[in-house]
Image (cartoon, rainbow, N blue to C red; front, side):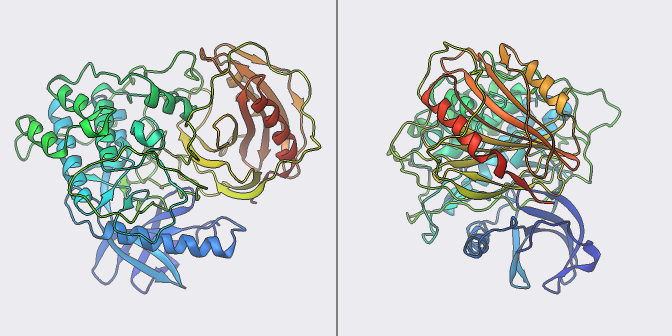
Length: 568
């Protein structure tokens, strides 16, 4: 596999003597997706080149190669008009390249951003197509696990396809390690998955319902902005929201979004109820967007009180694509598999899974420019404990004492990661020291009025009380703009800035703040804001203010702050 350097000109590269790379469609956290031409069959395809972070051990590189092949085996069994097709696994210089169907399309998320919530016929067509694709996947023993608007493609010719099976698991493949798990997007994840129970096909039913909720309401059912764990808290412990604009689709959505997996509406029943609502064949449901049309103002998201919703809100205007809207992502790697036998339908067992150390997920480079916005891959260590952190009452202000070193060194391991936002730029390789039992997830956020798009990588302690985060704002170096965005957060207390010097960076400032989010455990954050080349990087820790975890997070920050590095 290649290292994540600037890709060489595509015209000089022919993969396996057959696939000529034409131009980059986009970049994921560890992969580049190319528009390519199959010179043997004379057709356009999408080719994913998996990129390895600098310094990755040889054993891990070999494991990623093997997982590439496992992904191919998992989705190669699917042949359905509503599922993006895998064509081939090609090899060049011993490295695997994933060759996929190239679909000129927009993501469903982009459609909603451009035109607003869908009408009944549009939603029924989407629901029927996705349900049909999921039926085929479930019959093949595959659970998708990340059904969301960004993973549903609306083709230029009207076809609707489910894509991004990269974190799916094939229950027929039993050679994959079971020590880690990648969960789906927090706003669409099933409650039992979020709380650590076994992942079954029933999880896809909830996610389908949440997706339909989002497209009829214009906002996801759960949204806590920059705090995925807060969103997961609502998913697990909060009430199930009811759609207000679903009309005749309301029984389908509420039938799918049931917390008891056994009680969810089956896919067959979903399709039966949708049949009277489907449009006549040949109806043009999704006309091409009018570039002269006024921007659609998105509805106000449903957020917990006190969330980071002002400076870090979704964009007020749609983001124009920077390339031809070709959806071609083969999906992130790796995905989970088990050794159980495929079932004809979702029959979930309600036991709690015990998840071990997580493997790194290669986040998809979704090639509908904005389809990754807000998406993330979450890894959590449950170990028989509750998923969410213990509540801590709000009863103090941020510490005014400087962060100091500690005599008891925290055990850490060097982690290599990649922070790539929705803009599909290259670069973003970083490394830092992370406690070995902390787990990783990634999240991308679209631009706001005050800040550009950014990529975020988080590491969470196994008890859920501490967070280590890395944020990257590409082609943006305004330290003051980030600081002002923090100061503009509601109910925030910000300590005076202090200069910090980190080798290889400039403009270093340390910021410390606490925010009353309306909950019982207000977060306290210490972060360093750094400039490297044309990028702004923010590295920090967060924990409930005044708690033992807060003190431990401060010690960790002091220990690792000087060790953070970004590849040149």
